[in-house]
Amino acid sequence: MVEYIEGVLKIANIVFSLLAGIIAIFLFRASKKYEYGSWKLLMFALLLFAVQQILGALRAFSIFSSPYLTHIVPTLILVILIIAILHQIQLNKAGSKCH
Image 1 (cartoon, rainbow, N blue to C red):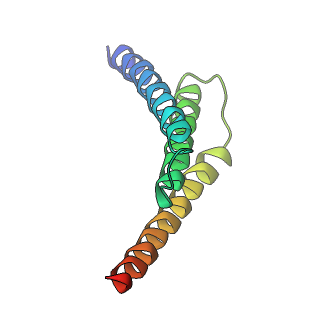
Image 2 (image 1 turned 30 degrees about the vertical axis):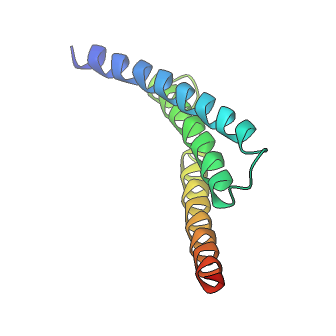
């Protein structure tokens, strides 16, 4: 029974990660019209999150397992999030000096 629940949750995880990836792609296409700065980095982090969830599901079903990818992708997500936050702080400081 536990394996069945785990399988259903992993399949739901794949569906949600694919939806997150699709949303990130549409947001990235829409952001070409405007300058969003750090939001583009957040969209890329969202795409990497979708990849990470798919890799986790593949590992759970013993289809594909790589210890390097399960550590490198979350590290990249964290680095991108930190850079995006620092970039937004810098934009806010530059914007407050103009007013």
